[in-house]
Image (tube, rainbow, N blue to C red; front, top):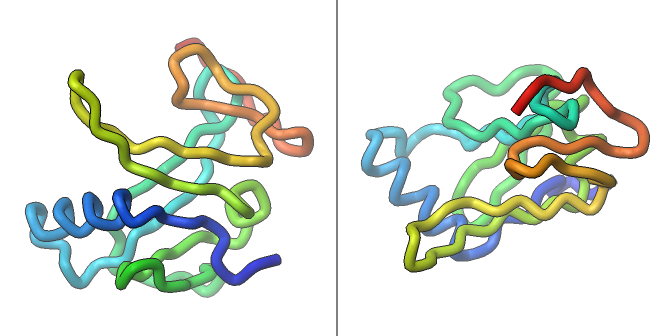
Length: 121
């Protein structure tokens, strides 16, 4: 398994740094995770954290310290996180090569080995 479980694009990294500055979180880690829930069974989590846990993998992407817990790393391996702007606004996109299905709202997914418990969208 690669040490860098997720790959941040330059665009995503720039936006994350702007968010860190705006929220006064410049010294924080970016935590990327997977949790049960969503209409397909699993959903992504992304937020700022100040604590490294014993089971976390830690790596640097464009000067951002990224944390992924060991359990999530199995599902996220090879995932690309990008940020795209459009006329309707902007947002993060997540391309997970391990996801075999996702819901219509685009916020949850399932893999061949981890389905989670589906909820209504």
